[in-house]
Length: 116
Image: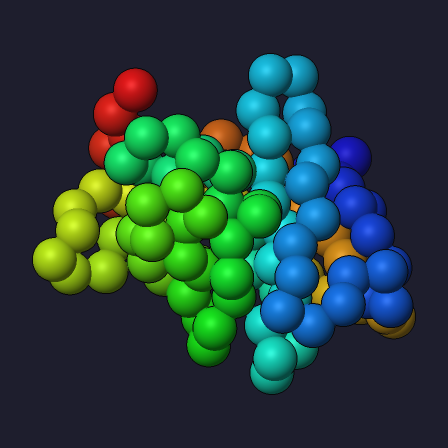
């Protein structure tokens, strides 16, 4: 059984935008950059829990709409001088379809220790 879940078609995810998918109680923001990279992180800023999916995407970063923290979408790490991280999730695009991997091994791929 595959642990990849289809979450969108590439055409449904405009460049520099995000789509939120929810599994159980976890909201995940799936982003598409201007270079068509598809990256996914938990939709909760490490600073005050702002919705990263509503932030501005630039390069491989998203700026939280609440307090302007910048988060690297590839690593989940906050950009200096801010400190903190969000959980990242593996993504892939095949035949124009966007997939997300939810397995615990993939979800823990970064060394993020989240704080409430």
